[in-house]
Image (cartoon, rainbow, N blue to C red; front, side, top):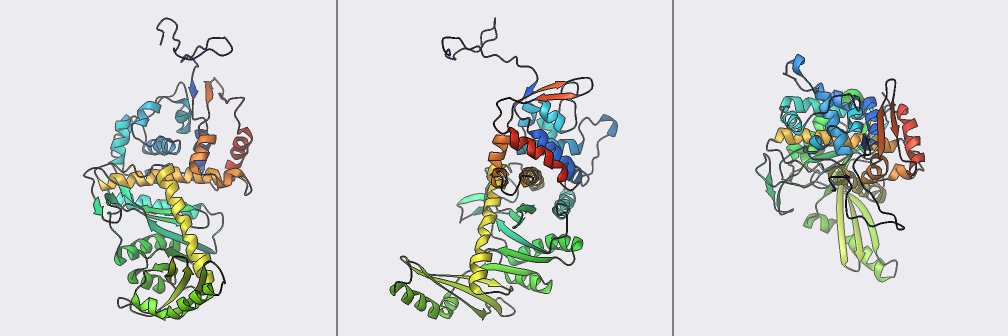
Length: 446
């Protein structure tokens, strides 16, 4: 930079005119759209819900940054694409983020620093975290205007690689890495998160799956005693303890079931029929479906098993699921179980678009708290997306697209005596969508 003029060098002239680039644009922000998320957070009250679960032992007379304010700031940063604690230092004076947590953009004090956020992450203990996870389930229930007749819970886990000596980190041979395998639970119809639970990098056993379901579904049933609940997961979750618990509590389930020699013998007539159908030119891939009663040695009762047998160019392929749901085998397999793949997209949004694998703290409690904050950011973007019309482009947009188009908006912020003015670019290409979503925020349940 030229010290005399403050002009950045190196830009070529345009149409014969030199280009002068300087940092003198005044009080501006590159994240004006964060105010949309701030309005949504005020309606949902996520930061207050989480802060109420933590005991704050600081002297009230000396507190500069309240717990709710720090949680709100951290969640907003994550939603805007700033997942690291160090980003708190870089953006603590940003006018949009100051307004998002309730401070005036110019005369208000700066926001908290990275060391304050680090102390916050290490503050909650196991009891506080259990309360916060229960609060997130309450948030899920409160997000419905009316009690739903039926909810479908997808449960799955995902690799979260670690690169240090974090608590709960284990080597997992399947992923060939030291990792966590946090459990994610979403409501399949709406994509709303229900629970994200940090856990060691190993496949969950039956007792652990049953314990998770008991706590999560127990909180939901406490609010909605009559709601119909169905749990869906792959073979990791089709454990006898989990199925027995669901049966006792009148919970529907549909889980993957690993094949074995007994199951393959039971479907040999279906496999033969599918092979003959392919030979006869029925289709390139021929599928047959069937169901039967089956009891593995570890089960305490016979259960309904559904088989899908396919004959194709690669030979025969047999897949199995176990369920207590009524219905045709083909419908239950193709329409109900296979739709479980949507849960992987939801986990992708949580992990990739919101960087929830930044679990680099040493303490497991701090990493669990981070997962909760990232889930709060997920709620903000999901709620913003849900405000769009059903046939709108925004309704199906990925979180990173919403961030790029609606959050990353340049704005000039001017604090006046009686009002605050935010001037957005005249050439902003998504003005209509931005204005529409702003008008819809009041429709969120308070």
